[in-house]
Length: 98
Image (cartoon, rainbow, N blue to C red):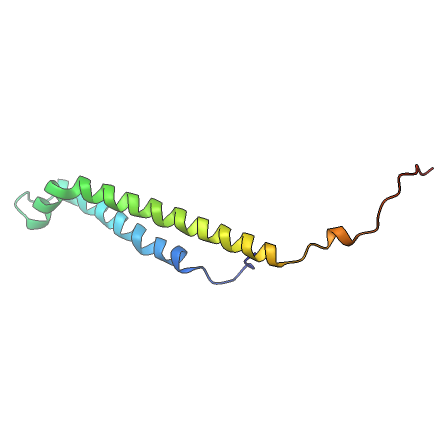
């Protein structure tokens, strides 16, 4: 299990720029509504904006789930390496105690 304060994995670090690109695209599409329709960026976003948003959204979801799955895999792997000390406790007797 990862200790608190341990550095995040590469996939968790990758979530930040992927999400930032998604947010910038959304903000750009909002800005296109108020800009000149003849601008090259506005024309590009009018033509390909929805596809771009869909691809970026899917990328955010995939990277997020991969990061969580990898973190869970690391946690389970580290827990399987730690010996279980609960089986070493004293055995209980079947006799009732008063």
